[in-house]
Amino acid sequence: LAAERLFGSKPFVLVGHSMGGAITLELSLTPPNGLKGIVLVGSGAKLAVTRAIFQMLSENPEAFFESLDRFAFSSAASRALRDRLIRLTQRCPPGVIFNDFKACDHFDLRNRLPEIKLPTLVLCGEEDQLTPLKYSRYLQENLSGSSLVTIPQAGHMVMAEQPALLNKAIESFLSTLGL
Image 1 (cartoon, helix red, strand yellow):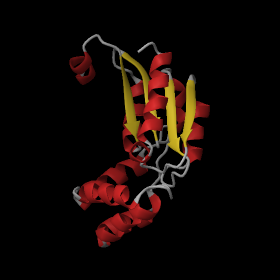
Image 2 (cartoon, helix red, strand yellow):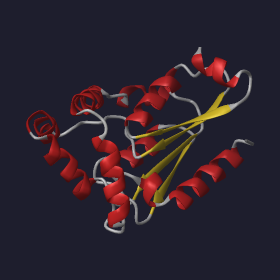
Image 3 (cartoon, one colour):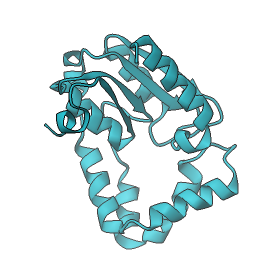
């Protein structure tokens, strides 16, 4: 396994944001050796995508990038932060983004969550409109041994909007695992 090549026999924790959280959940169904816990940031057990996103990416990608400004950030996010993250997103070809959203739209592990037995930290920005707090609550309620931390003044890009609060929550979780 790739994880065993990366970490050897050392314990590790996987952290996934949004689609990365979906990948983390998938990997947790049959956890690799050494995986001691998972952190899910702005994610969900099902990641349905609105048809408007597919339409924008197909017909007017610029409209999609403009929509990020309205939906991906909290009201407290600075203009500079928003602009920087949108510029980074624009570097990715619209076709790749389309396929990523297509994968998210087909993702649904709701019925398999009881199979995941790892300690789990669920993190969500209080103003996340793309994966709202109800998605994180669902994860917390359906993953045994999980806890939920909400981050104030943060949207979907919580790790960029409130990095200190996010890092503090992760560090606290790691300390409960003895890592």
